[in-house]
Amino acid sequence: MTLKTLNASLIAVGVLAVGTAGAFGLKPEFTKTQGTAAAVTTAAATAPANAVAPVPAQTVVPNYRAIVAQAGPAVVGVTVEGVHKPSREEVQQQQQQLPPGLENDPFFQFFRGLPGMQGGRGGRQQVPSQPFKGQGSGFIISSDGLILTNAHVVREAKEVTVKLNDRREFAAKVLGTDTTTDVAVLRIDAKNLPTVRLGDPQSLEVGDPVLAIGAPYGFEQTATSGIVSAKGRSLPGDAMVPFIQTDAAVNPGNSGGPLFDGSGAVVGINAQIYSQTGGFQGLSFSIPINVALKVKDQIVATGKASHGRLGVVIQDLNQGLAESFGLDRPDGALVSKVAPDSAAAAAGLKPGDVILEVNGEAIQRSGSLSSRVGLSAPGDKVKLKVWRDKSAKEIEAKLGGLPNEDEKVASAGDGQGGKLGLSLRPLSPEERRATHLAQGLVVEGADGPAARAGINEGDVVLAINGKPVTSVEQVVSVIKAKPKSVALLIQRDGEQIFVPVNLG
Image 1 (cartoon, helix red, strand yellow):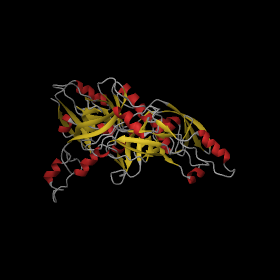
Image 2: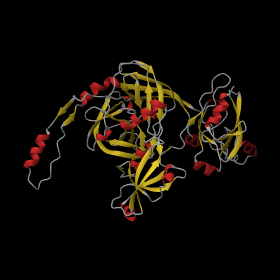
Image 3: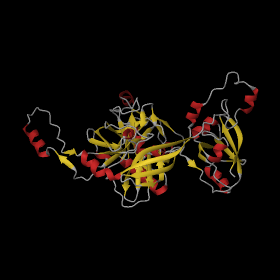
Image 4: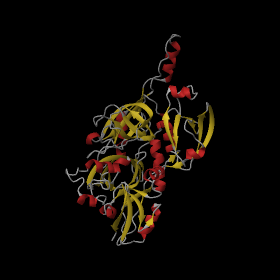
């Protein structure tokens, strides 16, 4: 697997070609003390009146040796095998250029737009899928085999194997993944397993010590320490997660591994690094464990995670903008656009509103709003404190769901029926406007019969067997009848064509 890159510099920390990472817990007694609160108080009392008050001494010094020793049995390695399907961007990058002189060749023009044909307006070159093997890590959170890891560790995996610290191996079932937060939940068939102790990320402060454990570059059981260097960090493309930023050395191979606080409790899952070289350069980012647990609860209950959507485009304020809106401080999230038919539109939010609070919690930067709304569930009601016309007002909104979430067509049996092999979702309102289509289903992924027929990611399915489609359920109902073949009307790059798909 390749590393996930964001803004050319944010990298998901691990799926190495080989490499594992693990997670560990520690009982509270495995700590050392240094200094006392009484000593600090006495020093403050005897200091001159004009002296700067001393910084209280840290009363707990982490025993990193004990953390590693105690938590070792809860480490698991996650080995994956699968087939990588090139994304639309990868396909476009790998398209071969036509030989000179063929751009206007009549014979080539005749075939433009057919599935599988490269070049021209209608086609994209078929880049073959590539088998892969990769390794990541996870950590056991319940003694009956529940494991947390990163979603990108098991992405596209057909087989997932978990290896315990005692060298036993188990086939793992992926209960669900959430690409929005990069959290995945696995289960193995085992009992009485060791577990990590979970902590509270909200109790962390900048400057607190932390420990990361994993297998950077395949070096197993590697521990690195550092401090919390920032909290609630929003990253490009990941505004929903309030990342914990640290300077603990994290490298490819640490993916899915734990971040511990000074008491040995897991407070985060190591997920990304900021790098211009591919290696550690002083900044690493972890998913707070309370975020991961919210996602875990949804996945265990329903098999997937859902996220709330307010339906606004927001930006940070600067001092100039704050003053123009009559605010003393540049705190809050400035609404620059309200999506039509969204929760925000129904609640009456307008461009120019500044959202100051959500459910009584202050919003200092726009990323805080994204994470608090995104980690709520669709249908939840939120109370917003909004600054409008130089005064505050209260607005209540009922959150919608995230658009463009994949809806997959499940297998419709075996034998003559088989499965279609498409991952579909309805067109978003923006896509309908851009394509001038009233309805249709966007292909998010194609394999099996659909891929063999030449259907590509990004195609829009308009009809099946001559009947227009507006929902995934319509396609599922046709496939459940186990036909030997279906005819799909698809639109690709502005052109429409019927594609026969053999299901027999």
